[in-house]
Length: 153
Ligand SMILES: Nc1ncnc2c1ncn2[C@@H]1O[C@H](COP(=O)(O)OP(=O)(O)OP(=O)(O)O)[C@@H](O)[C@H]1O
Ligand SMILES: [Mg+2]
Image 1: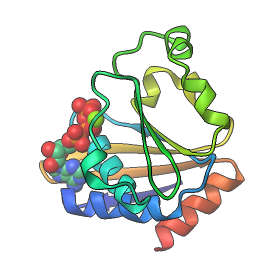
Image 2 (image 1 turned 90 degrees about the horizontal axis):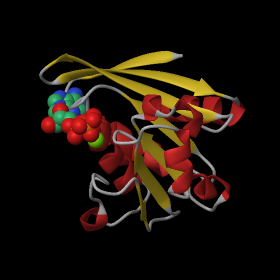
Image 3 (image 1 turned 180 degrees about the vertical axis):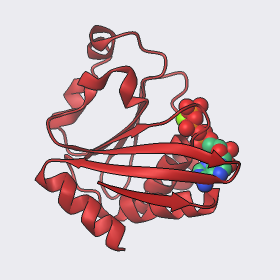
Image 4 (image 1 turned 135 degrees about the vertical axis):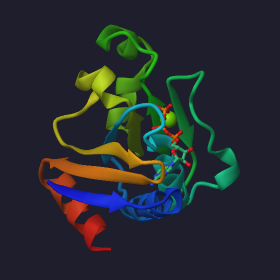
């Protein structure tokens, strides 16, 4: 586990870009943090890093999951409005986990069972208006390697 401090929205975005460059099919990133913590901002950076044209990235506010075409497909889910596992299951979300793409999930703590056995968990905590602490918790070997490469970059 590691903690990184971001001192600006731009820094969080750039951290996302670097992670996006490293993502491989099957990777799963779970994002946790209160409203306005910076989850979507980070995801926009990830999308750029994964080669997603910036104009196709929209927050999946009114759908649970959106797929962006990039170097690999990027599935972006937001579980904020979900009640439980059954509701998530009904969206077809779990079909994505065996697929070709990488998955980014905001509000993973709303439905913790959304996460596969191995994944990278990132918790964003506001420190002040422009500062966020990012707590990085890899679960499993691939996530550990991904986190190490990311934090070394
Ligand atoms: N260091 C920082 N990193 C990320 N965002 C920051 C930072 N400092 C300030 N911000 C601001 O915080 C806000 C984060 O908004 P964002 O939509 O990314 O949050 P969120 O976690 O996705 O919230 P929600 O749960 O409502 O979806 C933006 O307005 C951004 O400019
Ligand atoms: Mg968001």
